[in-house]
Image (cartoon, rainbow, N blue to C red; front, top):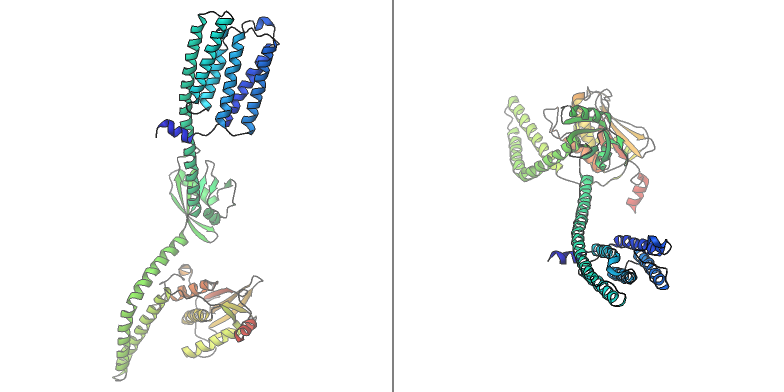
Length: 534
């Protein structure tokens, strides 16, 4: 496709340019009318007299220009027709006035040159050559007619020929300039569309980023940010905002050669890492990237656990079969009764077999996403039954684990999940307690009117040391040599599956764990029982 063809397919009518062209023509028509009012010595070169013919021509021209201007403003249809009509009007009027003012020597042909140049800039294709041809024929015809009837100088026909050549030169040059301007305009429009699309894509990418992004100006103020940064720092949605003081200090240190990253804390219990970078902005803006270290660690942990779960699931059969054989062989050896040392070794063997089997079960449980089936559990009946079951299973003296009745509250929770969580927490509490009367106690408390209930597990042991409180729920972290380090992690995951949470409370003075859940998302116990009967 040639440049001309491409420009023809991408050309769009420029109505604003046509309106400016008509305003210019309106000024010329007004000057023609005003020329009749000027003293004759000022317009002697034009020979404009207020004759009926001149008044008719200039008045009709004024009316034509006004109509053309109104059409170009209010009727954006048939651009070429409107432009051609206006150019033809200019050619006809100027040719008629030239007859009465001496022909080509009057200088009015300059008006035609301007009209042709303007039409070539805003018009399209070969029409501009058509306009130049019409202007040439009109001027030559008027000049020849003047020579024959009005005694114009015969040599003036040469002047008219040069002027006609100027019409074509003006039209061609203006058209070339118009094509170049059109090409640049189309290129700018396409680049603008591409830039707008790129901005939209970049904006969506920034909005969907998992990291926070801040754009900071030279004065240290936040001028732009994404939703993640807004949630991390608690910023408002719009407007220029002040940078939080920890980031201000870190930015100042980085500007003088300090570290490029800065750990932050105290923002909605998040552990953040801020990274600073320069930009090539002319406004000397700077970028701050915010990473949620907790989220990164959690994702890495989930990937680790997923890989471990797949590995364990694939070899569980091979692990459990030897364990079963070892356990069975130990039972057979126990029947021989060869002495106290022999029994002690068998107990060690059996304990480690049970420990390995428990570790395999816990790791397999990580990969199982059992859907919770919450129900309204009345804690004043569920907890005493649990305590009784736990004491009987562990062969404990009654009173070591106790339930302190309080408010009659119920908890929306999966019965099996809550039993497993409590068993884990109470087993840990019993291991670290004095094992005396009331060493481990369970308490239920309603939390205000927010629809939340807390179930507390408290022991009288030494409590959880401060240096391990942040690691206590990490998988495979344990302070006991026989533990797998998965119990508390699984308990927390089960709480989350039921819409609740598991947290560690302040030592009271021993270990203190809190199970939090809702009591307004299930039917009350009476309604649940009636529904089950129906």
